[in-house]
Every structure is written in structure tokens, then in C-alpha cells.
Image 1 (tube, helix red, strand yellow):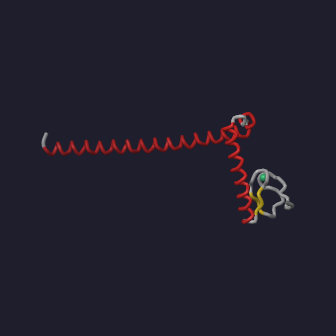
Image 2 (cartoon, rainbow, N blue to C red):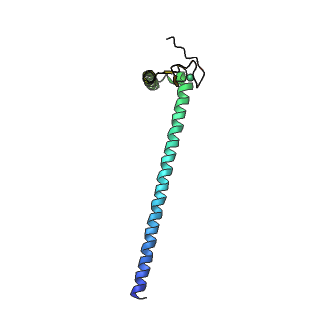
Image 3 (cartoon, rainbow, N blue to C red):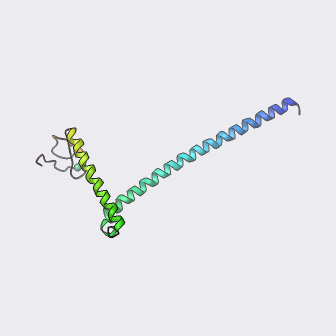
Length: 122
Ligand SMILES: [Zn+2]
């Protein structure tokens, strides 16, 4: 094998190594994306489960002091959210549905989302 042959072989193996490295990077990127997607899906599942448990099992779980404290914080945050949403709607001349929380124009008689009567007499 001559020097030129060696150079060709070395260039070839170098190219193969770069290609292999690039392939590994692509594989790692794909895996990172898959990990992120699975993490997101898992968080959504936990969120849905937490909402379901909060909606359906509150009385049974609230006997536990730690859980009761979590529910109290959730109630406090819900109250804050309702107050800020109302303030925002007032600024935008909108009215917030007391049932589903959707904002409608102040002139609307009924909620466009759930049909609840939006009375102006508060
Ligand atoms: Zn509504």
C-alpha cells in the first residue's frame, strides 16, 4: 500500500467516524425530543389525574392534614384567579361567566360557552 492509499484510507475512515458521530448526535437529539415529549405527556397525565382527584375525592382525602393544606392553597389560588380574571374582564369591558369562567362581551345576555345567564344586576 502506497502513501496515497494510506491517505485515502485515513480520509475514508475519518469521514466514516464523522458520519458515525453525526449519526450519534442525531440519535441523541431524537432521544432528547422523545424524552421531552414523554415528560410533557406524563405531566399532563398527572395534572389530569390531580384535577380528577381534586374534583371527585376531595372529602375523602381532606382528612389528611397535608392534603387539606394543599386544597386550601388551591382554593386561595382559585380565588385569586377569579378576582384577577374579573379585574381583567372589567378593564376589557367583558363579563366573566360565574359557572365556566369564560369572558363574554359586557352586553352578552348569556355565556357563549355554557349558556349561563349573565345578569347585569350584581
Ligand atoms: Zn359559562
